[in-house]
Image (tube, rainbow, N blue to C red; front, side, top):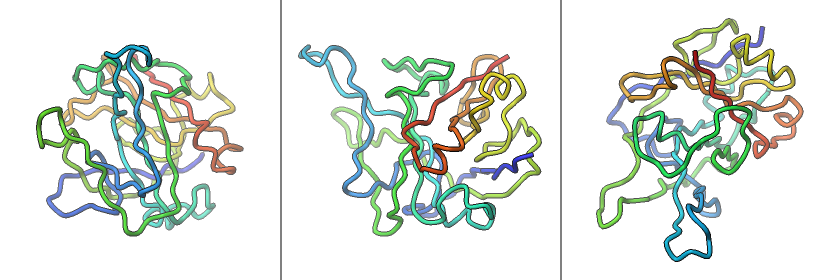
Length: 215
């Protein structure tokens, strides 16, 4: 079975700029725009750009020891975004489709740059308060690939019903429910970022799709 690189987020007051972290603001290179989605008709004066929710960034040198096959580059940063506000109990004008979705409401960005990065700044309207949740540090580990219902992670095996529906795809990132974040996929569920092995080898992260499994 394909091993999973476990992602264990935990609260910290340490600076996480340029490091792997969950939530917080992404540390994007200057030439990498933040992913926004236009809400409403672009010709309508009431339309506006809505930022996708930033989920996590992985500094790929942090996982090199857990990725001996080189499934991912071992330098640079990998960023994950998706319109998951609803699952965090928040209002959002963006409605994320649940099954085999690969449109503008998700983004996976890879950058070779991992130095001299700065947190992207977005504040609430008429406020200096950041829209981003407090960043959490990440500790990495591995499993034997068996399904671990309590773990976020890279790679591994999808639950059987997802693997059976998408035999040509593999998990890139798996997100489990987390009570302290208020994150829940309906009654009980999991979110997968899925990618084909060929696209992973070609670093075609723009071809990532998403699947929300729930009981």
